[in-house]
Length: 353
Image (spheres, rainbow, N blue to C red):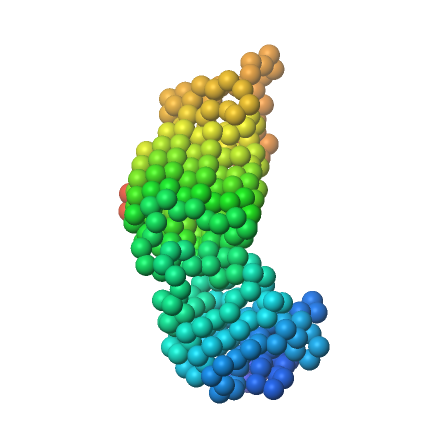
């Protein structure tokens, strides 16, 4: 038995080494910089020097530097000034977090994506003019009071994670059609926000971006959004109507949107299917309104002279609550809500055609 356990442990160690070695082997060092290379582009992943003023090179060992990796300069208390080259496009999570002496950062317009807490805990943010603070072409945060009418400038490519978190006085937002990503928690607890239009350019909507926007009454989601997660409008208790312009969007739900009554969309779209399954009024953007389904009446269909056939396929909803083919944390959350008697967007323990 002991011999068997020893063999198993040895195999586990070997497998772990095989998994780790390719990753660590990619780490390279040039001077004080640690970096990795993918697709002919370099990412700065660490810095071992002690300089107070730092100008990151546009190339390292002849390879263009296009990104600053997660935690690359985290808690470096020596750097006071840093300049990023025009080649940088991406700044990772916590990249400059805790750099308590970092007062000046030169960020080029080439930067199109900045992830969570990239500049947290350094004085750079407080040194910016009052209002929306941009990191390159990313709406990163706000210095001082949030404006009631938030108008993001043309050319903005991303709204960063937590960008306008707890901006309780924002009542309206204009997002330009250059934005492609709305980050996690970006408008969380914007409790005065009344409506939102997500432009057609947005392809990615993060987790909980409009959570607890209690006054939000209507939302329009543009044609490029592929997935509308169940947490996008979590606890938007005043949300009455949603317009979904992508006819094939994957709609995971509108959790705790207790006032939601109407879905606008196209005939034959996933929006219509979702509305019918959840007894919501569906208003087509390309035809006459359909009769809303009720708990006591089936969804109207065209008359047929043929005898009804037995459905050939069913999906059983036990673990996979949202029916996406995988059991994820979303399904676990719905099961937890079901066990304590809270409503869920999908029926549990039933067969659905």
